[in-house]
Amino acid sequence: MARKPISSTTSTPPTPSSLPTFTTATKAAPAPTRTEVRNTSIPRPGAAAAPKAMRKQITPEMVARRAYEIWQSGKGGSEHDNWLRAERELRG
Image (cartoon, rainbow, N blue to C red; front, side, top):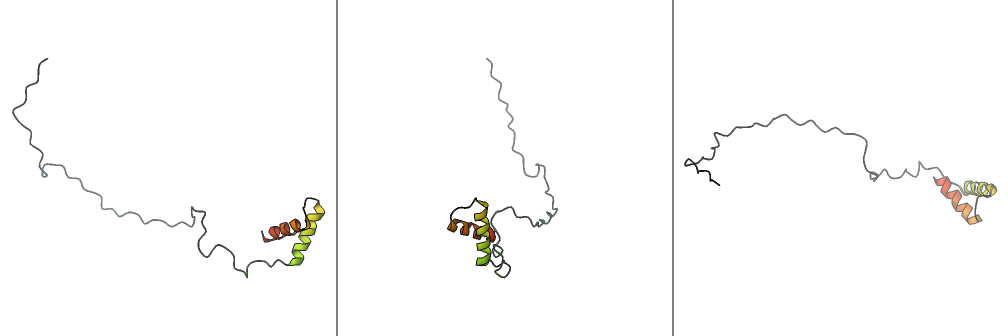
């Protein structure tokens, strides 16, 4: 198999002035838009719970009435279980 003859002329590396120049756009990036939607399940600090003044007051009479309703439905448990369930339902 025949070899290719080596060229006697060597190529010179390009000089910086012979390279093409590229300019970058100096256009300003658009300002980010703010949305009110947060993609997190973590609540913001201070917004976790309603103030105590905003919460409805649950009286023992309200709990007793709801516990009695649970007992009447026949789907309740013990007296204590009905009371705890009534509290839980009223607190939401």
